[in-house]
Length: 564
Image (cartoon, rainbow, N blue to C red):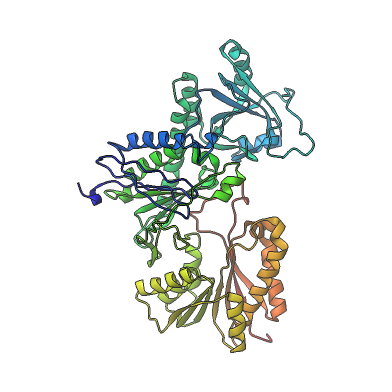
């Protein structure tokens, strides 16, 4: 059997220690634990399931690299775990679909046959709320100076002799759903299955939990993941994804698809990139990949296609979730294997196996790229913070007279230039310049350059609320200078974007629009708002937690002529 005949699954875990196991196999599993350091191949033993077991054992034994709590691929317990939440307005939100339970919403936790001070990290929990308004659960009190993410409620372990009493309390309570527990996070429970939204699945999970069979938590979790990911796939098929013109899209989008902390992108119809930003994903990575592989094998669009699965994570987000990854620095073996991504019939070279900045592809701007391109025929276009040239390439395909892309990263400029060549665009009409966009705009103003359409899509300038004031001044200055480059006699269009959730959500989005309006006043240019878009619809959102999942704003303005 040749390498092309073998199924490949690639795990790429940023900031993870490298592990290598070799054996004769009929299926090749490329498990690359990648930080910025290295990529290695692991040839599995006889089957994928056996390989999963090997991975679990090897990972769990690496105690010198990762803490014991973090190494298990599933919680090392067969206990039954219950979280009882307080009966108030917040618990009603949980019943109606809110996915995140904070510590101060919990009244008490219970573990049958447990022996820890808390429910272990990543454990599957049944979440209940008492039906009795008068029923009280005495919890711990915050101590002065105690961090807000420390448990503030009582945890009770009980054995079979005490089970009847606790089961009576639970049976008299209302099941909210099933989720995964994290004693170290402000998000104490991430609900994956709401009883109101998935009553049959919740009932089946409750039945499985009562059987007390070994590893029942794993089976319940897999059933929930299968349902959630299957629903996500069917939703994308309803959006005509994938299609002949687009093979790159977001398949699973965290809370929008009921999988808080987990996202999956399909790149080029051949590669699935799993992105983990929550501790439970790291704990259950084996189950997640196993379920995803099975569903992709049955996907009607991928018959006969071997899809590589690449695992990535974000250490900073995991640290916020109380989970830290450790790694050893090793020599890097960069893998520059190309995967061609197609979006709206425009082709992009991507490098999903690479450790560098040119790794990924952002499909959240898909609809916005196509939308603004339709206004670019015979126009002169400026694409600021162009990254891989998405806006400029779409504009050229739609008949723009000339496009200039600007980015401060040489990798981005090289990628954009290569993408223009891949799409056989005229190099005399489209060019890309490495420069700080503020410097470029000032130079362009001095040379009295003008553009009919400008796209301003900077990186995240406001990572949190504390940086919002500073970021708003930066957005103001960039938009002011961009407006000064719009055709002075006829005016033109400005698509200005922010991918900062703090900016997008502030005052329901009005804050960002006011910032742009203020920039117009400074530039002495009249601005008219034409439309406001968010991320492409494959970046689904949960109405129960909206606007918490909203991060991208793309606002299209008309900038009037000077003196109008």
